[in-house]
Image (cartoon, rainbow, N blue to C red; front, side, top):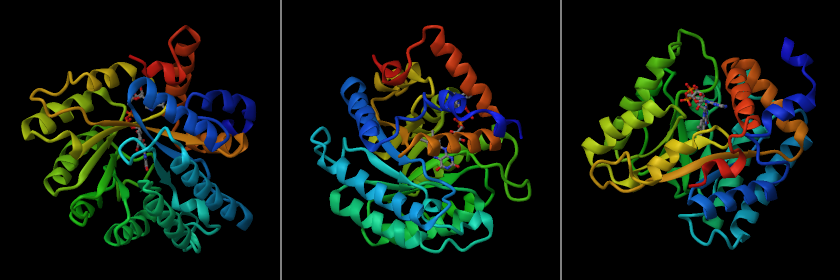
Length: 326
Ligand SMILES: Cc1cc2nc3c(=O)[nH]c(=O)nc-3n(C[C@H](O)[C@H](O)[C@H](O)COP(=O)(O)OP(=O)(O)OC[C@H]3O[C@@H](n4cnc5c(N)ncnc54)[C@H](O)[C@@H]3O)c2cc1C
């Protein structure tokens, strides 16, 4: 594939608007600046998929415990409300992942240990959703951790047909990030039409709110965010503590985020919800470039977004944290 021939430094250039850096210190710096300058929150994620050795599994887990300790020790984030949450992919801790036919040995235990540290330090954790081979495992461990008092949330992908049934098993009060899903899935089990996936973002978020869950709507689609307000939040008088809007760090969405912060989309004083950016970091740039290469390979649309984004910042648009300033 052509992408395999693109040199690492060029991929790094493409990745740089979306990755905070190559240490948790750099991710925390972004989190501090965003909070100070805009009041926006973060969820921090280590780029660590497709591990190649047991040493790497252990290093990934250690990196998460170190990250949690660093978040808890940072005086910028004195309370749960402003503290970054942490997002974790269960595949980061196993050499035999479900998507390569394995049973993910070691993964459950590592996620449980990380969840215990997060709970002890008062930090929210979200277990990211990977491709459909991971769905049962991810929902099972999230439900088990939630039932035992952990501040843990899950992710549902509207493209999967099974999600309609999965909604019914979400317990009251759980945080659920609603996404269309990044992984291409077979047509037998998933929608292939993006517009239909987006419609489900609205209907399924509404169902979850009715079930008493906390919805984290994660999309860069401005029309869908506006419809979420006009068709779900405003008519239902949904209180701002019941939902959150999330986006990926680096995707140029400053104007709509500012409109939400100013309360422009809320018709009846439902308040301003939390706005949270997903901020990935690596422990070295080779991990980050490998991650971006894989994402571009599985999702060729991304290449167009990324190039457009880079060209716009080259021609003078603000980038980094400053693009979110008021
Ligand atoms: C906070 C967050 C967490 C997520 N977690 C998961 C997860 O756990 N599991 C999972 O499967 N998926 C996850 N996703 C990805 C999600 O499933 C979608 O693939 C992704 O958000 C793109 O869908 P969209 O709804 O933004 O719509 P799209 O139609 O893909 O994007 C709308 C517009 O946003 C712009 N845009 C989108 N992406 C980029 C980009 N990278 N660079 C520049 N512009 C861009 C483009 O202008 C595009 O037209 C997450 C997304 C977010 C925002």
